[in-house]
Image 1 (cartoon, one colour):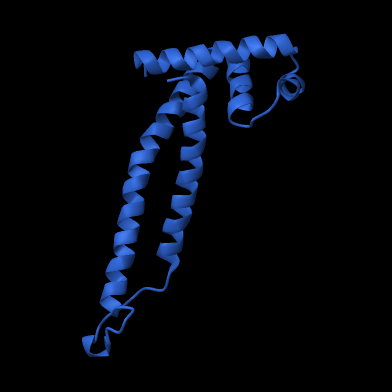
Image 2 (cartoon, rainbow, N blue to C red):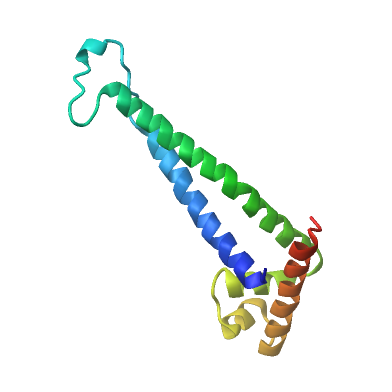
Amino acid sequence: MKAKEILRNYSYDLKRVAMLEYDLKCIDSQVPIKVTDYSQDQGGSGGGLEDKYWDRIEKKKLIEMELEVLKPGIARVEKALELIRSTHELECDAMLLRHIRNKSNAAIEIALGISVNTVTKKVKHAERELEMLYENNLF
């Protein structure tokens, strides 16, 4: 897998996790459904109180399952970036500015204080490192 794809998926997954966590928080902050007297449960076209309760529980479980799938992938990319950053800090910063923040070479040049040619070299070096870590499962 190419570094650009890895980072694009990482960025998408980060956004997806944020949205899912927000949805989970909204579900948790909803008024609790308490069913103590089933004679009040009219069961019209929208379903009864118990159905609403179980629908809410089901939504929450689905969100939690998706979070369990997404979080390990995010953690794996973050660990790879941490490993790259430990030895090649500028390269990692340049790659993240390029692929996560969608900055141009000129913007990266200004942000990091290096020339445009150096930006290209540093991005390519960090991309190779990330791809190597993924291909060889070194973490």
